Length: 500
Image (cartoon, rainbow, N blue to C red; front, side, top):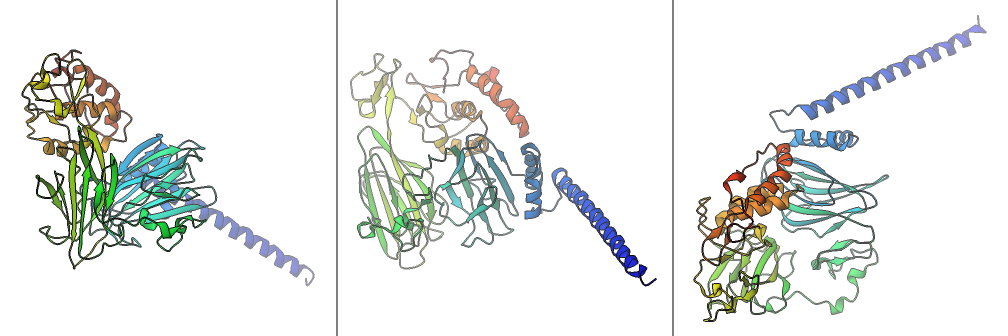
């Protein structure tokens, strides 16, 4: 008995171990079943109260196919999705309006290897400040053995992100309180040796992009510290001055850091005759006021202050609209008092050629119109016209650049109202068929102004082509085709209808 006792003891140990392994296996199987049920409930059920997806659930979702993942993301949050085109655009819900509370939007960007994903955030207005504990935009590079995460918030758009991965997760999160206008971003597939930065950014040797304010700021940001070299020759940001190049940039002193107190900066922008100037703001955050009288940006449609109309005075954190001069001169004034300071602004300007098209296709400079000479064979350049140049950004670059208001077909009073109505179509920019759809809606909302007088509707073929290419894609978004193509002229004659 004494000799058999140890053997019985070992047998009990083996039996106990086997029982424990069996229980562990059953527990693991049960956990997998519960996890699968949890995931299925995430995909198929949307609760009445908002819920956020935790990181474990996101990890489980990452094992799904792109189509299943797309359904999971949409049913959880109603935003986000899988982006697989070589380039595209995405933005926060309601942009440029305020984004809703309690959001978790996840976009998975996948491009074919060996291409890498490049992301450029063109505008950002998200509750801050750093370290972005409440609302944020986060970019995560997904690689085999590691991941790189960068998170941003506030009102200063980050520099271009050149990732080292062909799969990138972009997450946008908001809490239940303060909201801004959110963000809009563009992505594209690039080859590993073709990394780039925006024109006003500095690129490190490893492809990292820096904002101008991060260069020679005393903190090395590049691995080789090249951004802190030769800083004694660094051109400091100017407070005002003359601008005569066909394009350029202007920003408040120290941007994106807080601007100094008691500033008066005046930029005089002049381009070649026959051109107008378009001014676009990329970042904008000044002291918030009911009336812009302390810190503000004021834009004048003239070569100096007081010589022409004021295009607008702006303050706070709402981005000013794109502004266009009536001639080749524009003056921009930045004023700051001794009180509250903010991160300021960054803007770019571009010279845009202003020409008139004769019926023969010949283009004339603006100064040749109504000058007493018939430069067009039919004398159209000397006829009184109510045509106006298209200023709505979405509808620039069409086959024509003149429109006329009021739009009697759609009861639209002016271009500002047309731009507001066209914003609803910007959510469709990610569709491959957006370009034919853009030509159609722009042709309807900003119709071509005819030199002979009146405006032209789009030809029926423009509508039919857009419907053929887009109707199936719109069905996925539960959008019905919004136009009756048979009401448009069935012609290709440029005198009867337009081909935007």
